[in-house]
Length: 262
Image (cartoon, rainbow, N blue to C red; front, side, top):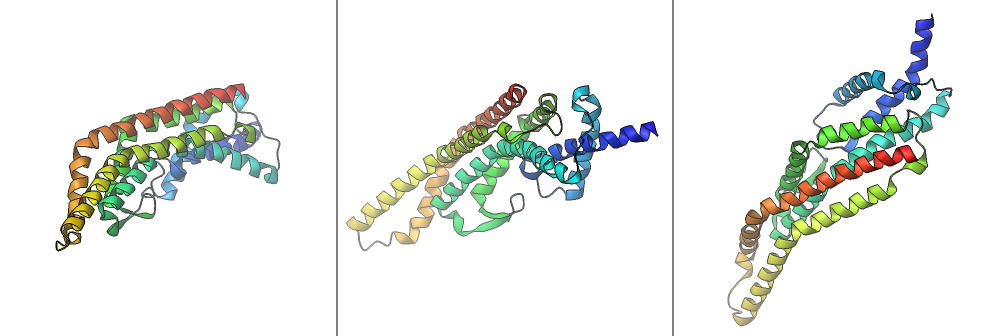
């Protein structure tokens, strides 16, 4: 009976570990993909929790003397930790997609959109291309391993059920969101500039030669001009996304370190 009692005492802390791990399966790149079945995500979360829980420090595996209603706030807070980590890790890829959508709009490709099953939204070809490129860079740079290691490190600083609202990384989230917006602007800026110049050139041509129907070839000119600047600059634009991915991982590690002080 003592063994059964010990297992029952460890059920609530283990469940909170599963909940914290489940947060990264909501929005994080690759792990949060809708192509992974919810049952598979749940199985992965339980398996990861089973691998992590025995290695946690002894002081983090204490029985929780709370009722069922008292457990609900703890579940929300534990889910918040994993969700924030997954969101911060996903923002660079989302910023790259936003920049790609601006590029597609300026090139006139936004008229033809397709469904993106990863985000369950419609997006043009350029936007989806940059999104999948950002996700690929996240995997190549070891973002999945880093995200997992940061999440595991949080258990050493904050035991299951020990997270409070004052630890919420609002500054980190807003900073990452601002960096993603800046990435979108930097990615789309070259094509936006060339599209503006092409519009000005077509305006001068229409004024100087009114008989010429420049609008008939205007769309083709914008597409060709956009690709003329996008293809040579693709490597530089992707390097910007790669740098933001690395910065996001570093910021997550810093936040995990500050949890010990909180």
